[in-house]
Image (cartoon, rainbow, N blue to C red; front, side):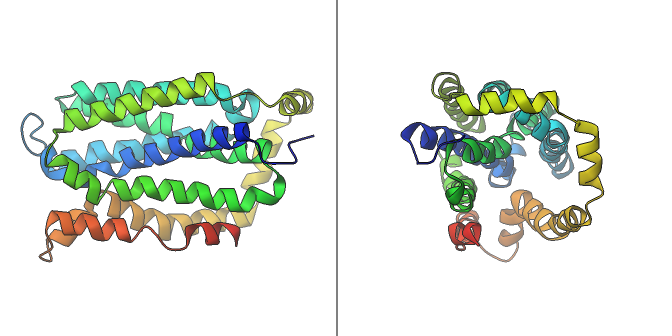
Length: 274
C-alpha cells in the first residue's frame, strides 16, 4: 500500500515539511532576540505591547491546531503545504513593511495560523512516504530540524541583528518562505496509494464520533496537561524572555543568546526513537 523503501522524493517531501516546521519556529521565537530593537525606532513598542503582539502568534497557532489534523487528512500534504506556506509568506511580507503595532499583530497572527500546519504535514509525510519502521527515527529527526531553527533564533539572530534591521531580517525570511512555497508547489507530490486510501476513508468518515472518542481518552488529556505545565510554560517563557532574563544576571545579549542556543540540543533524535 505505501512505500516499502526510502526514496529521494519521499525524503525531499519530508524535509520540505520539516524545514517549514523549523522556519515557523524560528519566527515564533525570534521576538526574544529582537526585543530591544522592537523598542526603538520605528516601532517604539513597550514591554507590554511587545508581549501582546508576540503572544498573538500562539493564539492563532492554537486555533489552527483544532482543524489541522482533519484538514491534512482530507486534502493531503501538498495542498495544505501550499496554502499554509502561502499564508506564512504573506505574513512575512507584512512583517517586512510593518511599522505599527497593528501590522505587527497581523504578521504574527497570520504566521501563527499558517505555521500551525507544518508539524502535522511533516508527520503525515513520514507516514505516507517512508517505511513504517523509520517513523520513530524521522519523527526524532523532525524535532532535530526544529531545534536547528530554535538555535538560529537565539545567538545567530542576536549577531545578525547587529548588522541588519528588523525589516531586512524579515525580508530575508520572506524570500526563504517564498522559496519554500515554490518547493511545495513543484516538488511535493500526492502519493498515489494515499489518494486511493483517502478516497475510501472519506466514504466511511465519522468525524464527529472520532473527535468525541479522542476527547474521552484520558491519556490525551494527561499528555495535554503535561505539555501545558512543562513544555508550554518553559518554552514560551524562553522564547520571549529568555535572553532578557539572562541579561539581568550580567550576561551580555550575545552570551545569553549563545546559552539559549546550546540548551536546545539534548539527544533529540535518540529521544524520538525511544
